[in-house]
Length: 431
Image (cartoon, rainbow, N blue to C red; front, side):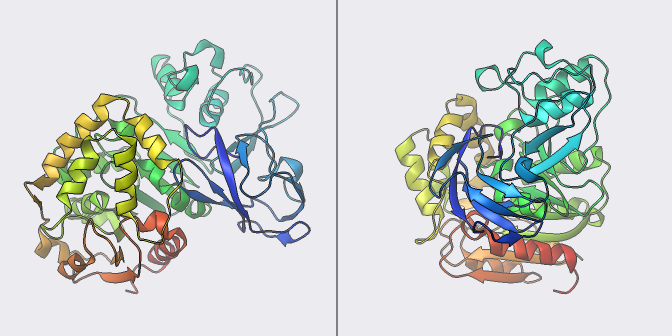
């Protein structure tokens, strides 16, 4: 069982998609795993076949425990059966993080004691920089060393930045002016940037980002005032958030990118395109905000301030279509996050920059429609938060309407969303 998020300690094996004895190809989905946030496709990293299931559908499995016995490719240390090996000079260290395996020699001076609680990303970075994990004080749950702890130690010691390669790297904030970002995939490939909706975070994209990162460089940001970018100062509305993302992209010295934004993140994506149109190759927007004054302001205000499990559960049900489902532990996770009172304080502050009275602020639509950028809209017919009728305001875009889907298409119909994003990245000028 891989760790698919910083707080993930276990996952539920939802469904096996490959039978014992049946061969599979690299990149083929072999199982579906439910985390505390979403259901994730689990791809094979090498060709092979499953010899035997070691976990059954519906079973809750701790991170690092074996799911199946494999033959071929990475063998029993492959994606369905992997544990982190203890590194030495004689043996490469195998690290599983966000369904990507990286094999490399471990420097002899690097301490990788498995008894030290540390995230896989923190272990990789410490290994690469020959930093002793035992010398760090972890900021995570139960003292777990996070990548942010390693980055701070490296900055303090004057060690240079690390590269984003073909493994999952989570880059945390060096200071309050740097957005948190989850980066996956080869740095040399096309870049897709994900921008979440109001009260969300980068992890909301995990079931979209992981499959796409197999061939593309992907970055999911925590927008200012949210999650791990909580204290970032850029919360003065959509334009300020777009400026923060622009600066983060400039820091990475990236060229042109594909933007994917949901709800508030869709409005941020459009604002960024207005600020720096030459940087954007395509826009894929899921129920974007900012196209009309109409918005479910009562639901948003209730969601911004509540810490009640019951209220959060009810609101989540209102965000999706009648036949859609969300991860069973999502409400629990939100409640846990909001034990920090700063979360709701920031959300209420942000909402006031987006909604005035009972109306949301509207983007300059004439300028948006004049953008020389291909735009795709993905919208659910049962979206009661930002109604699909607002798509008419963005007449320059192609609309993909999904019957029975609510406000969270990336969670309700991830496969369809992935297909449309791939299409936008491969053939952006054909719409």
